[in-house]
Image 1: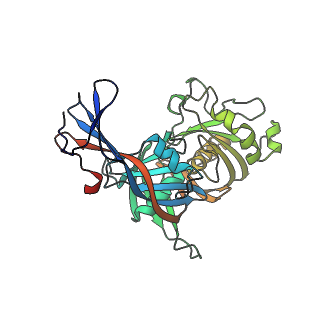
Image 2: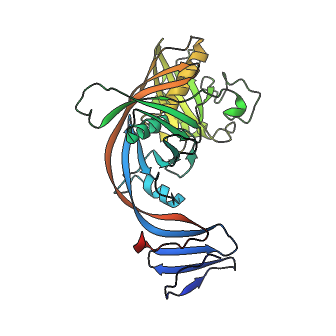
Image 3: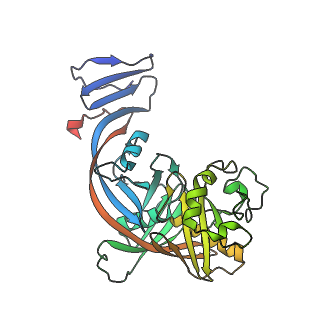
Length: 350
């Protein structure tokens, strides 16, 4: 058992005989795992700094924990993502920067507003690279390590707040088991999801995507725009039984050989202004669908702006802006982990 400092406070046992709880101050609770030799867990109210950013309107709260060992609760994440939160104004995704695990610039955790964790976020990766500020950065994620490069941007009234970033999002996974799909024998180039829609092309860009080309004259969906289709079908298709981890649903209109229009229903987020990984998946699917040769940049028009995407042998490159909005402070109920043999510090000592 880890020895705690004497404080004169009362001890309040929890239910059961495996844990005890000690209250030092009204906002501090220390819990000790009596049967564990590894760690003491400590919960307390804490004020943290955050940065609000966006990529083409896809907005993020970024927390820089590269020098702090803080674990967020699911309640914290949902509170930070609440659109009624007066400090953060909510988010599409939460980006948490932690120390690198494999020699990169950082490891980035990505959470949706419902506290579900995701493996990749293209717009968020550009935002993180802009925040880090290096000419080249390596951002480790659950979906792999992504190489980011800051590029010179055209002068504009927003140029002091905007950064042009190019990210290699890695190579796509195209096998059914890797997307993943419950039917591992299905042809991922033509997956029927709804009788009124063209079949989807499935792509994993660190997270699963279904790409539906809506200007297919054989289906009535071609008469409607992507936004209307996303609103009508997106939520149901996100939870399609074929998707064990749910999926992002992309409705794509082919405008020309190097031009697409995209509307995305993002899992756990709904209709979004921009989805970077969705734009990447759509360009990969476009080359598979049209049998055109990859290698040149394709402009993808999204509700929040444009992204340039190039599919090549060494990965899918995404080029676009990331914008700083504001920074601030917010209170959370945080958890810190104290190694065995060390005495947890009180809030007044931090």
